[in-house]
Length: 162
Image 1 (cartoon, rainbow, N blue to C red):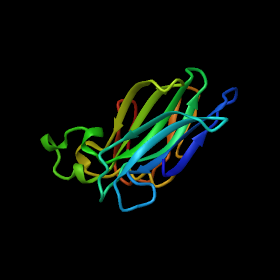
Image 2: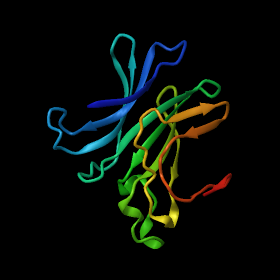
Image 3: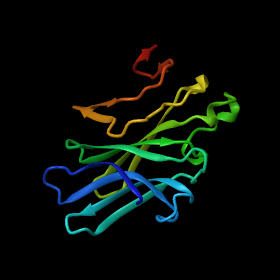
């Protein structure tokens, strides 16, 4: 992992869960960049490492924030993604959506097993989610609070806001 953008060390765990990004070559920032996550034990041993995305030069993927759900013992990652393999196929309904970034919420068990991923996007609005901040994901009881700075219409199944 090249840069750590956020981390969480849950109470009672001897591990640190971190997210950020990784280059193909850690000494050369001109190489491809990927979203990354790892679990590191208190003695410095890397137990888990994941790298997501396609390493696009002009719009790289990043893991922006991480949270821990104590009730479910899950790690929640918030990725800003542009790679086609992490997003829906926009060619069927929106011309410019592929040029923008989406948010990908990933749930992992505390042993690193991936549970599920959720893509959050602006559908046909062709607008980026703009997760410019790190540490922008918060868990309040059973709900996620996401901090971003997009100026557009956000539609979800639960809430309709402008």
